[in-house]
Length: 91
Image (cartoon, rainbow, N blue to C red; front, side):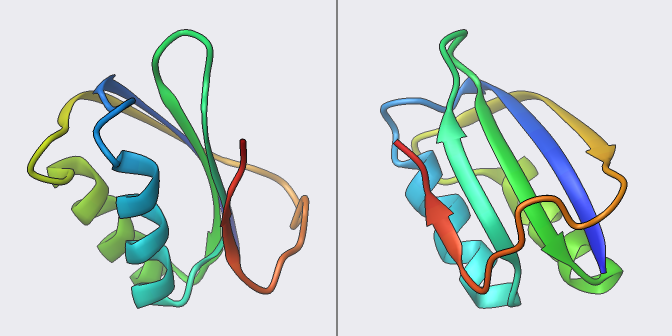
């Protein structure tokens, strides 16, 4: 399993992007979480296999109809971090 930290910036808060990310994660069988950051970006921790994560990131780059993605920074993390058997929205 691959563990990624993803920071998505652009018009991603107040447009349903976290719910979009959660729906896509569930669709691809990815575990982890998503949350808003104070700087207006969104942080995602995603755990899955390469094929699942590639599809997930492709959809994140496209965003939902109300978002506009300017940049997506993806870093692979060592270990599994916070293991979860689901994908949650953190508040």
